[in-house]
Length: 116
Length: 345
Image (cartoon, rainbow over all chains, first blue to last red):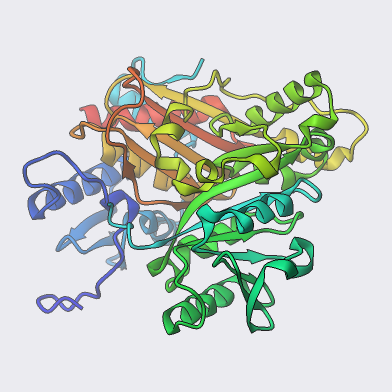
């Protein structure tokens, strides 16, 4: 347990275990940056008002909906199940409507292509 | 040595009934290079160990003259491995530094791999090593066409050993090689008889993150994006249809990947479709990382990423292979593209 925040120690998720080249070497600054990027991206994919994902102290993710109901999840992979519970929706990256919305936002080109 | 360097690698030998698993195991047990190995077998009797027996530790565990520990599986795998590790720590068996598990011929190896990767105790002592799948050249094509378990065994393999190749003609072997490659385009194929295989090549490294694997790894073979297998007509058609639903999707990305976007995409994909993602393997060029990053997963579980010391070839692109069931390749490709582009802006 963390002596400062009382949070339980958790196993790092695979998405949190990349060794980067930056001078910080995966230290606190790059960790914070990585969490912020994850949260920003997840919120952008969810893309609608009323449900928000926040990082709490670099330790867990907090999801809350417009009724004030919230849920704490330990790592990125667990966010999607929590979103489905809170939001009564399905999180599927192959959902054509989701992909079309993301493409519309960004004006896609090119990448990636299938292997030859 | 990486953060997992102190963990004991667990190598898996899987393969359909009669495909040569036990012959392969016998070779491991008698190889001096594998003296510090513990082996979990289905039955002692099948491996014919009597002449090698040094000490019987208990009814399920013996120590061989080579130094190998051999035990049979009488209970749930997790409990058996915890017990074996406990014996090692107490000095009741030699301090083995690798473990080899033989699956039953009809087993889908995925639950076994889940146990190793997800068990809260085991994952602190063991790590998944190499999955070696034996495929019988005489019956392998028929097994692949008729038995979903056989397809799954091939799909999760890091290395495939074609056995009994001396009993069929060259055209049959080539046909089988093609069938195996359709379900798993990244696994190197060995054709040598089990007795003469270089076991150190098969098991000594963790195939998924070794340079050799990367060289033959994701994207390296000329894999088609979605390749249904052509099956003979004499099989069980219901099972045959299941087998046809499995395909390898191979994606290449030229630009460096954003790790956050990739992680968000893959976690979401496995959340929604993990049951139908038999295997994920990739050698990735990640933005902000100069060396290649290797990733692999089975169904919902993904290993922590590892790095190669250098790029195995001049190809600096990311290659990702997903072996999937009933998931359309164009949708996967389009979705990954959309997620990666989110991070560019």
